[in-house]
Amino acid sequence: MDGDTMVALASIITAGLTIAIGSIGPALGEGRAVSQALNSIAQQPDSSNTITRTLFVGLAMIESTAIYCFVVAMILLFANPYWDHFAQ
Image (cartoon, rainbow, N blue to C red):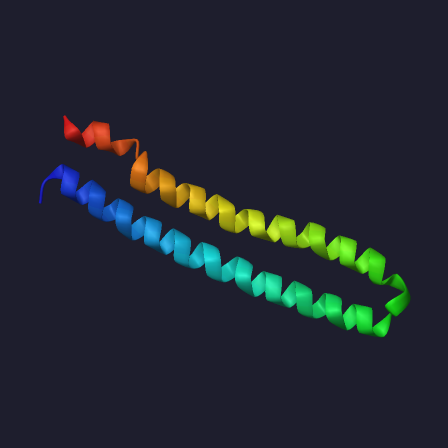
């Protein structure tokens, strides 16, 4: 295998692992956050507005992790800085 093939293979495998781990982790975190928020709302219905607002902020922060992983995977696949280094 030449250098281009090795870089392509490493990029594809790393991008796949990044998307896999980067989507499973936030999905589990969001499920746990929603579960705890529903339990809290069931126990204290008067504070549901505060809990809901805090939940949405937390969900946005959790989702940003998945978006960062997606961006890293896209950079590895389409804008890998090592392509030029090994192409020479």
